[in-house]
Length: 239
Image (tube, rainbow, N blue to C red; front, side, top):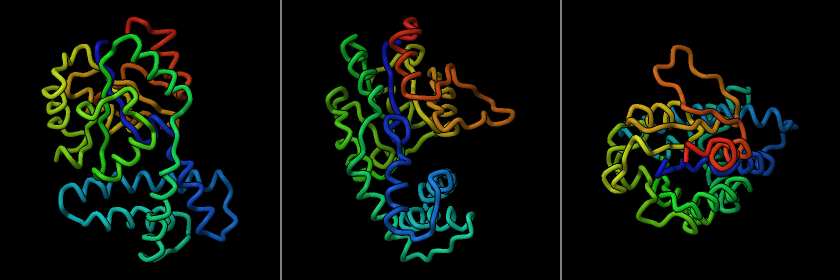
């Protein structure tokens, strides 16, 4: 592969950590780590659904940000109103200012950079918020601004073919020599595969492959260490 493009959230860092810290700050309920993990997973499910509605102009960004929290906690018989959901979102964003890369991801980026691979970022989300996370993670050490793409800036979001075509043109990619790495099967894997790219599923949440999936990842890994091994140690032909 000549080019490796990465998703950001829950691919390069553990997004659940910020969620856990936010829950501990705002809720008095004696929730276990496992219970918070389940609420986090529910919030991601609802976030994807509401994000698509927000992108389509069907709901406001505020409704997306608060609705995913309200719906996730409701699944676990915890009722919160819009005001508390807004506070949750604000606290969650503040906690994300402290995110750090998986150590193995930092090692991977160093290795790929030294090999002279073209690296890029493609992430869904609002421009300012995603840019903040990219800056906090220090991704400019390996990936310049002109190869960093945020759906809120482009005007198209994964898994739409348009966003992948846009990046192909901007980075002058050979799609047969390009691999995309992401955690979300529907947005990342399907999006990349239908664009003709190879796709690596960073499935560290160990989700099941959707039944009757039209596309499948070229490779699936379950940790940042496995991702590092895939590119640097075990699958040299991929690079």
